[in-house]
Every structure is written in structure tokens, then in C-alpha cells.
Length: 175
Image 1: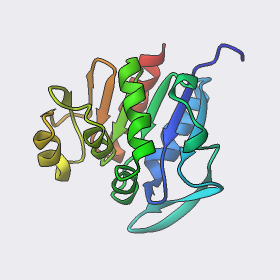
Image 2: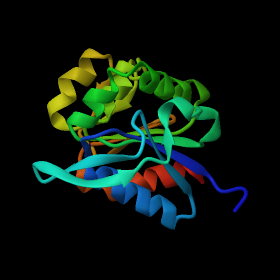
Image 3: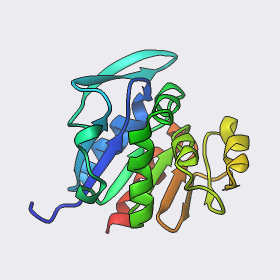
Image 4: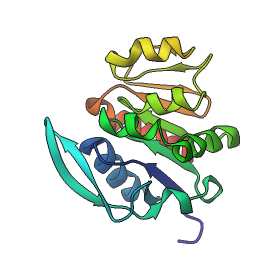
């Protein structure tokens, strides 16, 4: 389908498995093209139930990806994944490009750490996993305890239980 929407999912090793796989599956079912973008080539390994989980193929290396080629960006959580990505200048710049363009920018669980590093949360309403609430508030965000919080093009959720509402919000933003 030539006019299909395209979504980038930015992740690296240690992504929360359900927060990448389930939104990807639901977005694809909605007819949206989805690409996994990563600083690594080949495959990246997820985190599931307190241990390493399955791998997922990387569709495009971050250095070859351009925000202009996508309609939205999804940032899965897990503790390891966003903590690694927020130290990657290219990952931070990729997030900033989506924000500057006003494209849907969606993060779940610990994913908002990358939003804070990119400097895009100040003065914005958002949610995240409860343990990083103080980090979000220190970055200037107005933190809420809700299944999904949408502030303009910024979409955030707290945890894996919120994935259905999170994904529905992303699909709705692309409609």
C-alpha cells in the first residue's frame, strides 16, 4: 500500500519484550508499516520476566534512518533499553527530529527517559513507569498517573498493562 503510514520503533538490547512486540503487532494489524530502528545491526535481544528474552530483527540501523521517512516514533521501555539509548547522541537527535516535526512521539514505561534526555518534556503532561516519576518532574514534565497521557503529539503510558490503550492512542494519532 503506497500511502500506508510508517512507524519507527527505536530500541536496543534490553527493550521490554512486550512493549516492542505487542505495539508492533497491533500497528501492523492496523495496516501500518513498522520498522525496528537500532544502533545495532542484525538482531537485538529483549528483556522478559527478569531475564533475557527473544530477539527481534533490526530493519534499519539508526545511522541510516531519517525521521522524515516516518509518520511516528515509538519508544518501548524496559530499564536497560532507554538507559542505553539516552547516552547515544544519534538516538537523542532522532527523538528531537520527531518532536520538531510535530509527529506522534510515543513512549511507554521507562521510554520517557529518552524523551527527557532529548529535552522534549519540559512543560508537557506525561506519564511513565512510577519509579522514574521524579526524573520526569526534574526534567520539567507535569507527571500524571494514567493509563495513557496525550499532550499534543506526545503520547505516554506507564507499563505493559497499558499497551492496548497506548497502541490505540498511537493508531488514533495516525488516523
